[in-house]
Length: 219
Image (tube, rainbow, N blue to C red; front, side, top):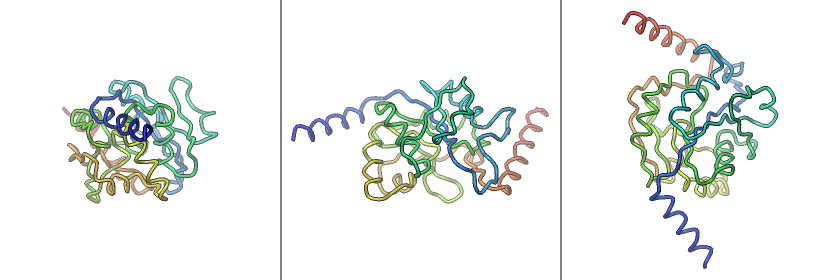
């Protein structure tokens, strides 16, 4: 009984306090559909995993790059890394590993395959953060579902994720849908949420980046 009361008190405290936010860049995937490592593509003059980490640094307490086991040996030592301790379950394991490392922090999780993600989109997410929700996320303009890999996961989501895992779920999107405790926003720029998973996606994103650069230079 005492343990249950403690857990309930802890969850209530997590609901009302605004926890610090750490950033987590997901770079541990094997990029099978792309055919090459997405985290090392140079979209913006450096490896994408480091570009994304730099994007988060002014907005977060600390920023970590999530790697699968064995991957961190080649990592740039100027960047903090977190190695997955929940293996074989993709981004779900990376998020749980981050909470195992620091359970009282909120985690702003972004995938590395978002070459059009920008500071304004991240600031919009942070400005509209709801600490009383399990997570604050965007609605995907592509399928209308919550986008789990551009999401602020609040500390209380740790136990929710563990509970879903115990029931066989390993998809963070399904957690956001089924928990009914996510604060869902419309993205200020739908292109910013574009995932690049295939060579065809690569060509589309590359063209948009070129067009954006031309417009910026013309202005």
